[in-house]
Length: 131
Image (cartoon, rainbow, N blue to C red; front, top):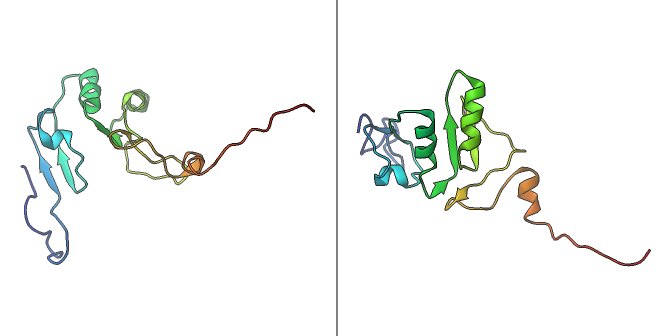
């Protein structure tokens, strides 16, 4: 653990809050790298090449959200297109209510928002016959 850890963040002593925490020297086979952690936790995993980074990112049974950070937008888009996650952001945390939200693999198959979210509530019907 580099920073953070147990206890409440300063000024948030009451309630269910945890300190933002960063772990370093994480290996991809560790539980902290393989589990979905819904909290302010970052695990830093080193990689040797772009292909290695993509392999590590996809080596999980989950796939809710991912982020690609880089100055070369063409390269960032290429990497993002290879990640098995329901949403991938490039260079910033952004949201778009028209973009689908949902996961891949164990993170779920349903979608919310936009056309994809409403389609789950539709019941298509076909009526066939002579004119």
